[in-house]
Structures are given as structure tokens and as C-alpha cells.
Length: 387
Ligand code: KG4
Ligand code: ZN
View 1 (cartoon, rainbow, N blue to C red):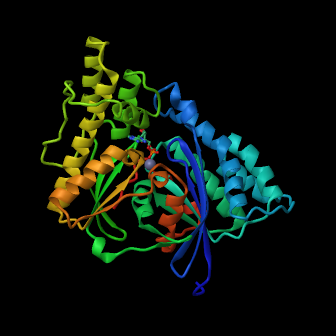
View 2 (cartoon, rainbow, N blue to C red):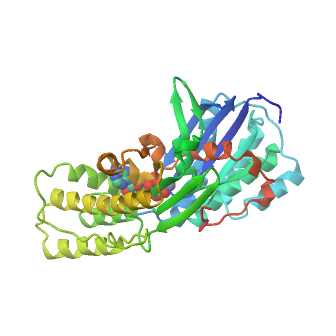
View 3 (cartoon, rainbow, N blue to C red):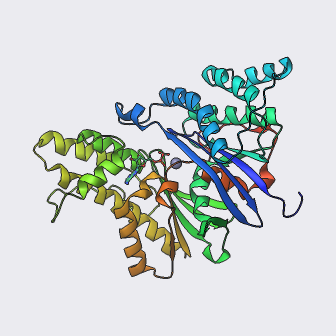
């Protein structure tokens, strides 16, 4: 590749309930965020108190083209130029989107109306996540890569939550860099779908050291919020209610597996305990209960994260995933690091980058240009492991 050439990457994320598309360009290690559009399906899933995969798939199909157009427009890369798709190419596009008919209906007029944008790579989350949702983004990316003749970079969603932390703000232009002294790092990735502790040995070298054996921490927030009638998504709802409580809570919930010697987690028992407690005593102070739920989840996450950081002599702790937007979690973790391992650096994403977005996928691709392949070679793996 030509040295000092400006490279532009289009990143696509659809692994759960957010349709996220971003454009970044970089030159001489300076990354410029051209756009980062996220369409969230929160309202759709509210009635279920969690993400319903087939409904999410339908929404991703509806949202993909409008979100792409918005991202291209904001980046100044949406240019009109009418052309017909040749019959042979139409056949291939039909084949790729055989299971995403709603998206197919929107993508054909889009490709005919707009010219190929000035983009060099397309990147897409190919796992882990909800399989039907992952396929929408991946097949969407495949069609774009095929029709625009661009290389495709598959990105691991968990790794993307980690790597977005390496985007450093300096004035308007951001730089992305890996500092050797930050490794090894312990990464805590907690969202509605995942709870994992990852040892980051170096760039491109990871080891999954622990994960949840049942529910994810975000799922625990969502399910307990539903029990208490606090709405969806549960994390912010519980956090807001918990902030109303002042004093010492009398309710005492269990901290499942907090003292086990491994780095695994279990949150389903906590949900059950809340349910029983609430059913027994409907008069419970919801603010007190929310406070105790949040504190129980924080206690468990912090205990294992700090233990891992000590045992692996981590130079940094890196956070990612929707649950790490929790202010109380961030505050208590920072305090504990300060008290117990003050030489360990805490890396947290800006709140808007802790939840799912296309930027984290584009940034992951920025570090992995060598992994670019032909669109035919990319497959979805809903249980993709980080390694
Ligand atoms: O990473 P994310 O946007 O999507 C995936 O699940 O992949 O995470 C969403 C999860 C939900 O379970 C939501 O309740 C939780 O993150 N969440 C929070 C907060 N904001 C979002 N949990 C605790 N505190 C918050 N402030
Ligand atoms: Zn996520």
C-alpha cells in the first residue's frame, strides 16, 4: 500500500439491538471520525424486557440502508449517480441476501442511486452475538464489498469493545495507538449479552480467562428491573432508582461466585433472589432494592477484575460494553485500583463508545488491515471466541 495515503474504513455493527455504522479515515496514525451513526431498537424490545432476536433481525434489515446513508452523508461521501445493476450482479446480490428480503428491497435502489463512495475497506462484526442479527450486518457488508469491489475485514465484537479504548483524543483529530507499557491488560467486557474477563497479552494476543456461566450482568440488570417494574433497558433504570436511596440498605442479596477461585461469573441466582424477595414483600422500597442490586453486581465484577489484575500483574484494566457506562461501577473500580493497585492504569471508553457502535468495528479494522479478505470468505460465528 502507498505510504502516507489516506485510508477510509466503513464499520458495520449489528450483533445485538443496535444498528451502528461509522466511517473513519486515517493518515500517519491520525484517525479522523467522519461519522458514527447508531439506530437503537430500545423501544421495540421494551415490551419484552430484553432483546428478541427475530424482531431485532427485522429492525436491522429496515435500518441498515438508512443508517448507511446517514453515515455516508455526514462523512460527505454520499454522491448521486444513477446506474443500473447488471443482471449478473443482481443475481449475486439476490443470492447473498436470500434470507434478508427486506434489506434486499432497499439495497437495490440504494446501489443504483448512489455512486461507490471513496472508501478503502469495509469492516463488519461477524461474532459473537445473536446469529440472525449478525447475518444481517455481515450479508449487508458482503453485498457492499462485492458491488463496490472492496476488501472485507471481519471483526470480533468483544475485541472491538476493547480496542475502542485505544482511540485517544487530541484536539479535533484523534489518534489511535498501542502503548507497549499497557500490556498485559485485564479487560472486563460486560453488556446485555456478554460478561467476560479477557487477558490482553499484546496486540492481537488474548486469552479468555473467565465468563458468565448463565446470565450476563446486563441481562441481570434488565431482568431485575423488569421484576421491579422499572422499565428497559434495566441498567440505566436501576442506576437512576438506586441513586434515590440514601443510607444503609437492610436488604441483603447474595453475591454468587464472588469468592470462587476462578474468574467465572453467575448472575441468575441474583435475579432469582430479587424475584423471591419481591414476591414475598411487595412493599419493598424499590430504591433500596435497586441500590442493593447494583451494589451486588458491582461487588462481583470488581472482586474478580481486581483479583485477575493482581494475579496477572496487569499494567492496565480496560472496560467495555454497555454495563461499564454505569457511573457507580466506574467510580468504585477507580477507588479500588487506587487503594489496592495504584500503578495499574484504568482505561474506560467515553460513555457513548461503551455501548455498541460502528466506530469500534472500524477502529478494530484499522489495527487489522492485513486480515482483509474477499467477501466470500467471511462467515458468521455467534459464539466466536477471542484469542
Ligand atoms: O453493549 P450494549 O449496548 O449491548 C449489548 O448487550 O451488546 O449493552 C447493553 C446493556 C443492557 O443490558 C443495559 O441494561 C446495560 O448495558 N446498561 C447499563 C447501563 N447502561 C446500559 N447497565 C448498568 N448501568 C448503566 N448505566
Ligand atoms: Zn456489545
